[in-house]
Length: 395
Image 1: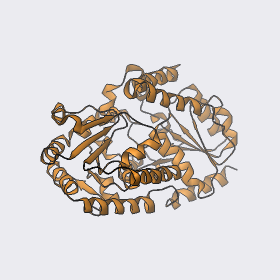
Image 2: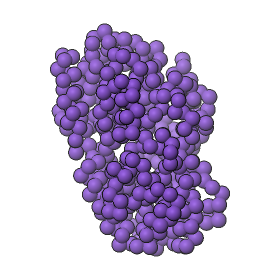
Image 3: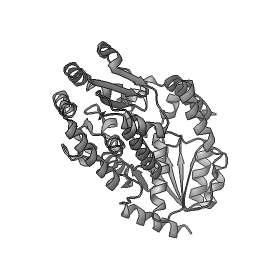
Image 4: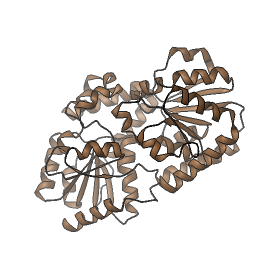
């Protein structure tokens, strides 16, 4: 009952945030997963929901592991046949799962059969102590907030039976190691379908009518990014005041500073869109930004996906110089990192005023995305070896 209430809260929020059409698409996508067939294999990924997090951490990782001949399936914890899958798999990766009665039974049965449980997270939501840093938490309705009251999956992480965790960044790995777990960093990757959709978006861009406008794009998946975007508002205003051809292209839910209203139609707002349309929107930009709030542990936890999602459509980025971004980007070559408002203004201005720089940096970013950030480029040998050992042990 508790999980049903939470799901209803999330569904209501999706309709409110994304509108009836796009919100209904998300809800239907979640419902369809209940009926997806789950065959026999080696590794079962179980997610607490749907969306970009589940896509990257379950669907894409499963695709990447298939390159190493693992047989993987993905489902949600809402699946009514969940308990029956314990007999079909050796390793169970639990991503953002809420511990309800069904999950308790599943975990108990996995333990009885002495199979492997891996805790998976791409954020700090497992620990209630960090929720005060999460801007979106204050905007949730009461039903949705119940998901976080014990930390998402916190009980699983604290279970002594669970020896291993996977995550996206070195920052998160350090946090998880403090919980006494062996941690494997499994970076986010673009799927084969993403790469195909990006190529289509690039082809569409090549045939479209050219514009003299310079579009700076910002993509917000949730309302958790208001404070992040606010950190660059002053820089954006300064750049737009000096360059009348600059447009600000905002996709997804976002509350913005009223000072941006002065630019009228130069600020374009669109709702969250399906995955294939996302790459079309990205390719339509000349520059993409990914600002983050400095000193916020939730922001330090973020992966580099904003960089390679832009790179795969040859668009240069300016991003906040977090540990993860500075490790992923060669500043001035395949992207720009910025530490303060002055650097944001300076580096945005360089890209706005120099079409050649935008083109060269976008090409370099594309090369980096193809070479390092797709599921076809597996570089997790230690994790792969661990999985093989667990599968042999559990036969």
